[in-house]
Image 1: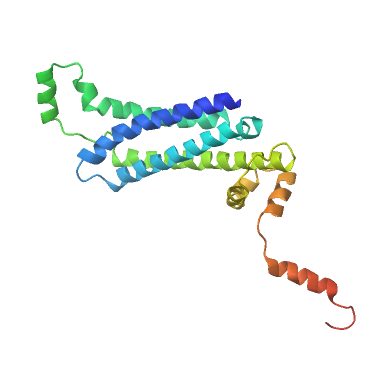
Image 2: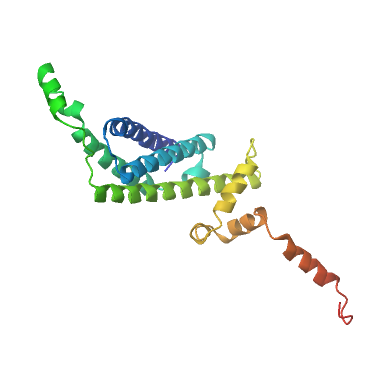
Length: 218
């Protein structure tokens, strides 16, 4: 995906989350005894919203293939499908939508006699939590890899425009797990190992070994 398409797609996801947030807030205010699962889902969607905004900022700052190559179309498409599914169910359960076709008196009577009910069962809500968490991890990884690609460009001399090296190092350390490292080629791995912090005691031991005189026992 080119950078403009990525940015537009991410903006679309953020817009859907804005709508979901507005509808979910009604349940936070009006539904008594909300389940922990419901509250957890709201928290997860809030986190996803933050990640998408970070991703949009990164894409807008580094508007080239170094970022967009880390974000595949299926990442955006799967996330959109999930959010559309949540929004559709919330729309169907929204009292305002149901009452919009009735008279003013009919809407008042309907709202008085109809409690606001969360449209997902506990099991469905737990499944949605898992799905949203998966999307969070996928997009966060794309954000980290995208930041790394921008770093490699900078190290290659193509860009150094106010790059926040401290932030990038945090992302580098976050990438040092098997799943993330497996996505990088050998040259990228060498750069990561060079940037990331190391154990100084190991370096001291190497120096001591080189300085030790053979045959002295020291």
